[in-house]
Image (cartoon, rainbow, N blue to C red; front, side):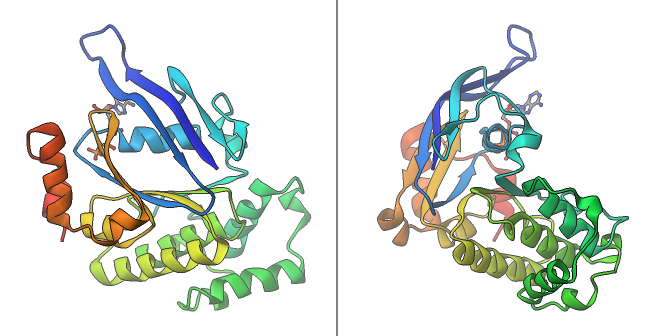
Length: 265
Ligand SMILES: Nc1ncnc2c1ncn2[C@@H]1O[C@H](COP(=O)(O)OP(=O)(O)OP(=O)(O)O)[C@@H](O)[C@H]1O
């Protein structure tokens, strides 16, 4: 479903600011795989997600999604089959527009049909049905401006908008990091439900190692632009946070430097 072949990315090459963000990354995911990615500061996690989303292009290597080489495909075209939720609840939704208008935009991204044609009763009913699965009452607030929603409500809506069109790939970019703990568990449970319901191939970056172990069927640990340890479904079942820290030390001969991961529960 997803294949990364020998991906390299260096920012400001041949200058004093040169930063090698990805260094020969080759990985693949099967349909329905859910990989969580952890790693040290500056390991290349966000760069990898940006490469998948088409926000950045690799210097070398290629990206394949569902049998198609998408390496040079611009972000707006990939948005037809990639859903993404960001860390910041303010990103991913338009605050000045209503819930219904935001959902129409999501739908419009994936369909050729113009969104100006208006919302039919059938579409509105479909939106209500999807919103009701969140169980936070948004189905009764279709005409509320999204800017009035709380951070947790907005992140739940972003997650729904990224998934109800059934993308080929779902990218989660530390999507619970800005939420307080009660909202965080709501969003994590929703994530599990939506990924399972739509059988989505999912790539999630997180700084919380427990979350990385609990969610999904695969795990990649990154450092200095590459995946230095990975666990498949079997290996992941028995994995603990100390195991991950030990694995890092074993491979690198030093401790993982990640201030946010170490501060997280
Ligand atoms: N737009 C950019 N311009 C220049 N350098 C960049 C840019 N984006 C990332 N980098 C550099 O590339 C490297 C990898 O960064 P990236 O943000 O992918 O790491 P990360 O694993 O997401 O880090 P963190 O967990 O600290 O957010 C870092 O050295 C970073 O400074």
